[in-house]
Image 1 (tube, rainbow, N blue to C red):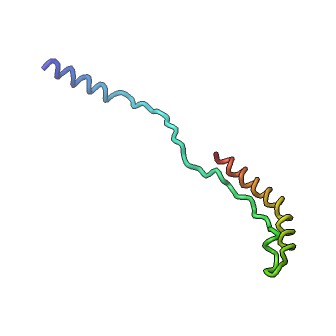
Image 2 (image 1 turned 60 degrees about the vertical axis):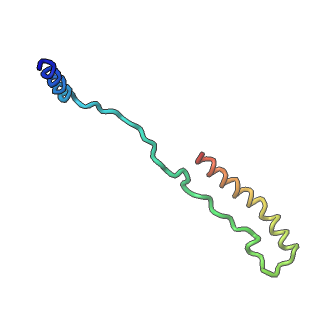
Length: 82
């Protein structure tokens, strides 16, 4: 009986203690891409369907620097997400 009374007293004193507040940091998903670069106007898309092979090659040559710049911008956006 003595031990039962002691156990009841211990349990009652434990209930009177203030709860411990603990801060827990949980990662929250947030998209890292805020916006994609604008797609440039490629010269190849403005060619007529019956354009000669020479005109197509020249349009591709003019588009190469524009394409490389656009690709670099896309890779920079992707690298920012890693």
